[in-house]
Amino acid sequence: MKQALYIVDVQPSFNPPSRLVEEIATLAIRMPSIASVERHDESITPFERQLGWTPGKNDESLVAADRVFIKYGYAPPREAVDYLLSLQLDRVLVCGIQADTCVLAAGFAFFDAGLSPTLLPWLTVGSSLDRTGALGARLWKHHFGAMLSGPDEI
Image 1: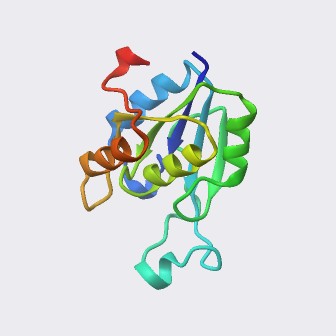
Image 2: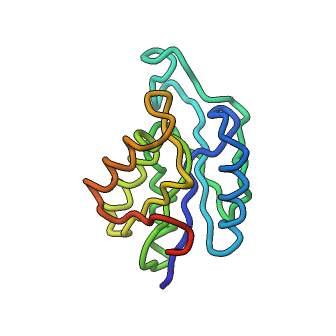
């Protein structure tokens, strides 16, 4: 099966658990890997005005990936979607930070593009609303269906 790993916002602003960073990094060297990093531009996404928060200006991905795409807002940039499409994948494995927001937004973008997004819930944490990621995993299962239960299924 031809697949790639999409790593959502594993960056200092979101204070990811070290275990999560290490396990994603171990997986990222096994297949094509793509990471997103959230940056802030108030003219694109009004985080400051509406939420009183912005990601770090100089954040970089904490996981070395083959390609890194900067994004503004919740969804992956169109360039990341186009890059994944160019790989002609059977599925995109998705993991990272904020299962109930940014990870879910990636799922919608990839689903709409026909990329067969598949969640890796053991490599995903939620937002401050649900740090376990359980809410995001339930929403993912409902909307996209494809979710693996452990590393032996990759």
